[in-house]
View 1 (spheres, each protein chain N blue to C red):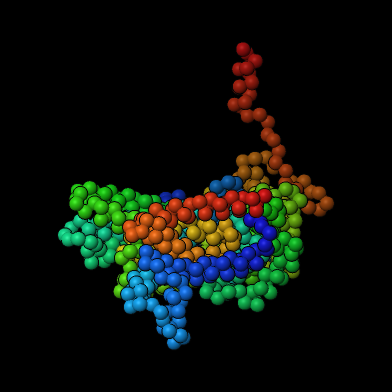
View 2: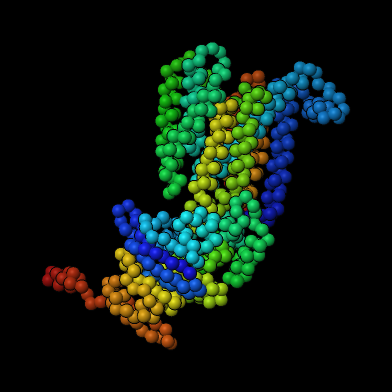
Length: 271
Length: 344
């Protein structure tokens, strides 16, 4: 379970996350959505311990993450970053094995338990054929699966994903999110993710939180949030929700030409 | 990178070759010099000290081997290993391929300290206080860089590196001013700056060994952390790496070891930046493979370079820094080409 209590994060004088309260029940998936600059990445980075909050706290499984050292925290929360750094020359197996760092420490090598954990994740995510490949040579989809594998190798009850589908084609987006969904359903992992795609957010998450200006605007069941008129207002875009085979598809609708473009057109015709 | 040998095999072969190179360097360091003493007789003498057979060396030859060449050899091994492993460690800790052991101002601080000693203390030769002032200058320079760029440990490392550049520039200009203002000691300063193992003695070796060995051990032990750090500071922290602490430990150890070496042998360029890269070209990017091999290759390389430096124009000596670059650069270019062909 993740509990975010009155979390406030600043960058200089700017408030990026403003007194956010959030509870993610164990074994469920919560997706944070919101327009650019809403504070989504800041929120998940704070939950992953990468940003020191100005106020408030983050609790996982009843333990406050604030006073924890890096190693202890890495055994509680794993992160899939938005733009993972890809070290050239590192084999997929070694990259996934980085996820065990917090377990075996820096002076001791991986134990047989660590190797078993890595082998198990590599098998589960069907990365066996790629194990010897250089991470830098993988395709976008393979690479992102490898990054998720590294996070799962950490063996944490909570996984935080920041825009995990960035740069992936539709098929690989769905595949990746299905893979994460399986971890939630089969392994009881608690997931906090940010996503830009509202349709995918609605179809994969149990709950959606709409963030705007660093504050929580909507918080509810995925289906309710994607159908809430507030969503279009916050994105300042016309949105329609279409039901396809029982699932919600959120479609942006091009609005009529604005006053500015009309004016330009009329100026052009007067010449 | 790809070549005929699989990676694991290649690391093993590289390890064996590097060990043989160190053994070869030890024998060359003891047997080669202006006074011809056969390799067999040196080995015979070495064995006689271990209680096997009898030595055929005269007392003078024995003194040359054990009081002149041996301390110089050990100093060369320590200096090569330390500079190379410090360079490799900095390249990992700062994720910067251009990093070398002098990144944070060790060289300029030591240069200024040594110049003060050489210019201010009258008399022939190198004053006894020179290593002490060089060491103090080196550590002071790194200390100032650390204080100015300290925030770099928490955010990007760029600030720390830039602080190193600023401190280095300032101290180098002060050193140059001092050097120019005292023309009488200019040659001494110049020779010191180019680095040399000629002044090595058992006492100087004994003085620096604890620092250097300690630093080498810490750097090699940091290899696993540096492998994690290759995914960047944020991801490393999320994987459980105490990034600030690791970087601080590595900087303190490398600075102490490098300052100790520089205070004893002056500024030897090139080893710290090129040896780790050459090793990386052969064994790949994991610091767990790079750093131990870098210790061996750095040690062997510097002793071979010194053997050349003191024999090519005997009885006078070439500056060691000149030889390391003159020999090392072509070797590195060949390795680069070999790696390029292997990658195709």
